[in-house]
Image 1 (cartoon, helix red, strand yellow):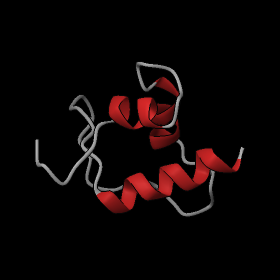
Image 2: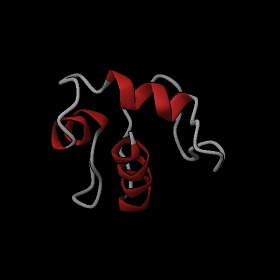
Image 3: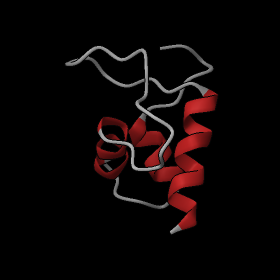
Image 4: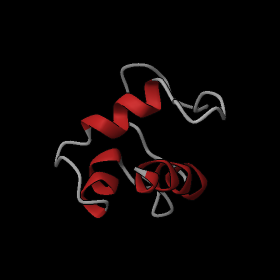
Amino acid sequence: MDDATITPVELSRELGMDRKGKQIRGFLRNPADGRGPFEGHEIGTPWHLTAEQADRIRAHFRKG
């Protein structure tokens, strides 16, 4: 893992959500923000989110 990335679990904890990152992983699989799919992830491998991807997720979940 790169120092410039964050996992769904880490991001979920930061946002005060479920500790396993399930909501965030669900959003990663089926983003409902109208900005299209998240690129660069191979099925069956862990997510390592870039700063830009993490900011997109933060913006989505902080709206609600």
